[in-house]
Length: 405
Ligand SMILES: [Zn+2]
Image 1 (tube, protein in one colour):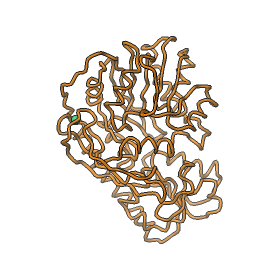
Image 2 (image 1 turned 180 degrees about the vertical axis):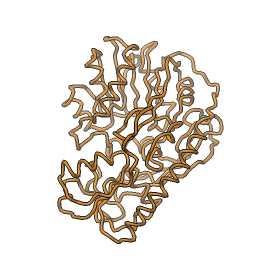
Image 3 (image 1 turned 30 degrees about the vertical axis):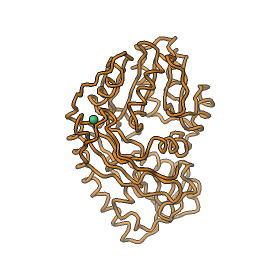
Image 4 (image 1 turned 120 degrees about the horizontal axis):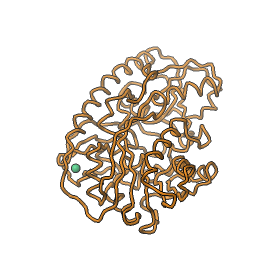
């Protein structure tokens, strides 16, 4: 991952070029390996779809997922969390009525293949995964004896008409060219084959406690609603079989609102525009709430900066990269960043080294947990796994008692 060629982007749903700017997201940069420096959150003036404009081309994202992927769970030796497992159970229950034991199933972007494992346990044994990260493939083989091909959309060689079901969970929100991706997969499906899509629901971002602007992550570049997802599917040769919204735990204390659906391969493409009137007001509300939440965090960080105290910051994901640009966290006396993702260890941020959790034994400074979604998990890791006595600074007190609707 090196040079970034930022491009203006056509609407991924309707190809229109006219859009409205809602918010400009910014990220701090690592010393080695360029990461996104930010993007514009816009809605399409023609169809209403919400998406990130001025982003690098797909090849840049492909390299990012291959080299810096965080879906390998190194802190759990490749195993998913309890919340992930619950999500896989829910998804398999939803999928079961649409498939048979003979169905040939492909999970595109399967991470360590937890969902395929769950389907296999239920008697749906013809399963294959695709993931760009080679580590995911090794973990899937070791944990579940499931075959995961290491490839991405541009290099995948999948024979035409070979699958009855293609699974796309947490994938479409990451893809630059949604239309070409869906058209490729249309070809991979047998006649009447189905596709299962599960994406974050942009119309519900503001319904749940979240770190400010966290939904505009370094990886999410498409912000679907139920209607814009349907429009994308219809335009690329899929009919709607079922659609619904679900609120599921991402981690304890964090709800991920999703819009999910089953779509069937058809031979017609519906090009009529079905305008999405919901996404723009919902994103604007989320941005308003994020600004409010960020003001509270700015005060907390202000106090740390003015104390001049040495601190360690845990986490170099979207949360930290965003705060480094929008608050004066960069002015804090940070002696080290910590991250469980081995791909970041050895790199540096604003001249400060990124170290592994294990290296923390050499440091006595307070640890600022720079994450809402993993705040509880990181606290647990510090106290109960690493057994460290360091003071812990948390930015969020709204994690307990969050429950799905
Ligand atoms: Zn559009």
